[in-house]
Image (tube, rainbow, N blue to C red; front, side, top):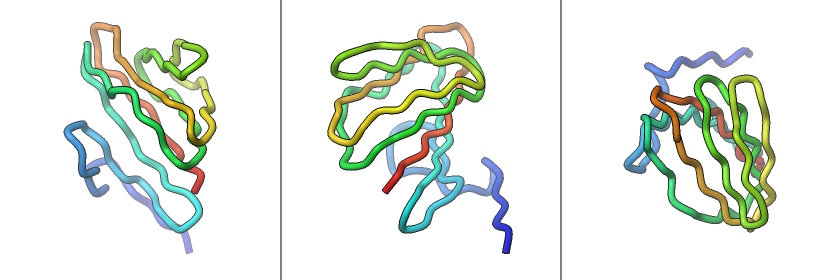
Length: 102
């Protein structure tokens, strides 16, 4: 069976950010994050690997040892236990799909 979802139908994350749970099962979770200009997700760690997929706009992804700019159709991977932070330095909204590999 195919499961389809849209940002308007998706459940919001329990955090003070525009995040939508696009898909979730015991092995993987996909969350669409939208950051307004200047918005930052503070440094944090997770006990799982995360794949970031740029959807629109530009974001800065910082990890303990490095920092990259993430644009549309680019990916970045951060291993479990590594501290990470997202920031939108631009003048327009930026969207990123976060794939949690559980």
